[in-house]
Image 1 (cartoon, rainbow, N blue to C red):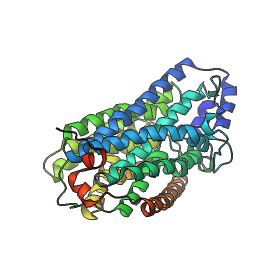
Image 2 (cartoon, helix red, strand yellow):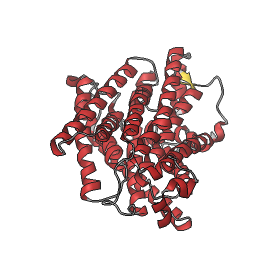
Image 3 (spheres, one colour):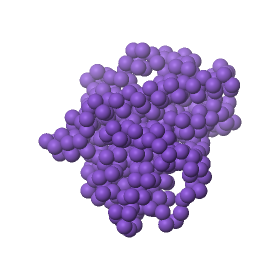
Image 4 (tube, rainbow, N blue to C red):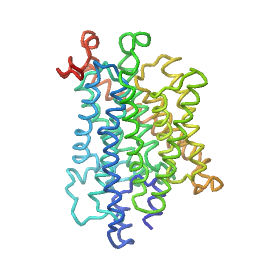
Length: 422
């Protein structure tokens, strides 16, 4: 019963009411499931701290390295508290199919004995908290090297409450998109689409970096980019494998297809760079890894090995061309390709899911394209509109961008009084 409910709602999460029903059917805590989700929780936090921080940090110029780490680190702390205060209640409360409600503010209903399926509710809550941490942190890559610190923190707090938590409820919390049959196993829409679209809105309202694109130096630490990407690759086993919410065959297959897609995304990017640029770069290979991972994320619960090979390859190729289109052709300064890799990859995975989950490819045969498309449109529109409202308000009150001197000097010293390299 519990496994069927998880699969129908996308496995990334289930509402408290559904969880309690599942618990009644299961009848007992599973120590194996609990141990696995505890491990997966640590792996997903590891993706943000230090994985994403190092991946993004290595891509910027040396004078802005610490400012990137500070934003990711600060968001991790802030998002955790926002999740405890209200985010979890909004996402997984049972008020109605559009809004979880505020009945569980400050986790006032949480007990040591409470279960969510076969694991303690506290473990489920913590696992979901790590998703709430990394999602706004992904957006950081779009506005590096030119944005103020305070508006980033305020935006992240408001965005979790008005974009991330409601969308989580719609898809993973037993909400209206779950009722329609939208499948998003580990966050193609909930994580990558919301972050990618919001990042694009942020870029348009913020403006380009000074001297973009001709005067922007290449990544200052490619080796660090690879190290960060490697941490993300390992952590993604918890991200996708943990979204089965059990230590079972579904988790095992999710982990396997995640690795296959990451490898194919990496190789696809290497081949494309070798063909068109004559040299394959380490930064490109790492970016291909993330493209493969983002694309497989929503479908990891329904794919087999054959589908994983295809989705990883397609994700790598499509995201490669998305980067060329957005940053090179259109000259949109999405600095670290958040939309082109995470947004495009996540939405692509959602839309490919019904085709690549075919039983002939080792999948479960689940997914309806029109339902997946409807869910994608809804999430994109909601994320864009709400993000724009938040950012316009913050821009009016505080301003979003540092002054020209701070941008020239570098944000490390201008905003934080520190230097990464002495």
